[in-house]
Amino acid sequence: MRILTFLHSFEPGGVERVALRLVRAWRTEGVDAPLLMGRPDGATRTELAADLAYDLPRRPPFPIGWIETLWMIAILPRAIARLRPDALFCAGNSYTIVALAMKLLLGRRCPPIVAKISNDLARRDMFPPVRWLYRQWLRLHGYFIDHFVGMEGPMAAEIGMAIPAAVGRITIIPDPALDERQIARLHHAPRMDRGPCARDLRFVAIGRLASQKNIPLMLRAFAQGASAGDSLTIHGDGPERSMLTALSSDLHLDGRVTFAGHVPDPASRLADFDIFLLSSDYEGVPAVILEALAAGLPIIATRCSASMATLTGDGALAHLVEPRDLEGLSAAIRDADHLRQDRAASRAQARRFTIERASHAYLACFQAIRRTHRPQNIFLPLD
Image (cartoon, rainbow, N blue to C red; front, side):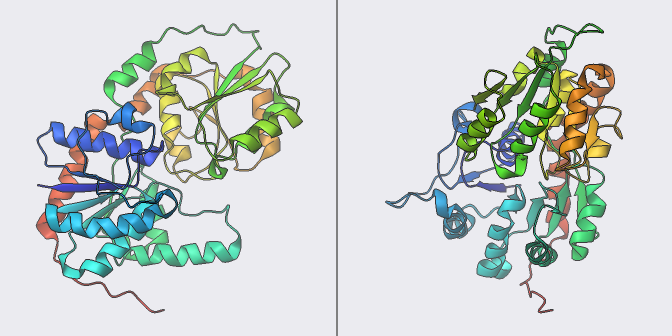
């Protein structure tokens, strides 16, 4: 069986990291799993793909990062014709427009497309008119995606509600953001436990510095709720870095908040901290939460997806607040010295999300689709 995965670049992102893990796992199991890259840029090329073979078409004599979706639409049909895959793996929501283009351009010659839904579909952060348009776009997915993969149990209902035509074509496979060796390493990493009266807490966050993560909310909540001796380290980089450093200064957090930038394997540093923070407006199944669970770290996070409650044991493994709730987040930070984590339960939950389990489940899904797929042209509804 041949499964073709296509990615825009090696820029850091949860979707791309998981896709690269899957390609590597499939190849290890003897599956023909070609990888098409739009461009070779990004830090994860050396971190996760240094020894991973991939196809890279000749680049035009101008930057393509700003038109990476159009570039992928331009190069993917030729790769499909040359490689003749049995299936296409669409690694996340941001790639589904490419999937639509392949169905329209190739018609019956397009292989079946399996799409992982990687982000929240409700998107309550959007303005109402934009959200209405987004809902219409989601409904169309049921007519050009052959099968959908959700990353946690509640996503089955979420996908079915947003994409009614997908009902009966949804598989839940816990997102393979971890592997067994990584979980063991995080679980057994030496860390200094806090005493019952200790307060000078070391908070940590990991994520791209982009609007989705709502780091301004985190900084304002930290300024309101943290004690004078508390510190916050944010691992990650992105387009909002200069704005966030300026906001940190405006909030008089200089010396207490550290922007560590992009670092390889930031999860390996979690043992150096006391509390994990997540302030996102929306997510799918955040890999950073799984890493914090594997490390046994107490967690304060927003209910940024339909899966957050299930992911965190209905609140037993994290203190959850509503997205954009400044008062709720600052209160949780203020009371963080009372948080304790059941490390055994955290590790058990994290072990559901390993590449060792997921790669086999994905292959079974692809095999089933290969047996039942009937090529057809798509006809998008006009209503």
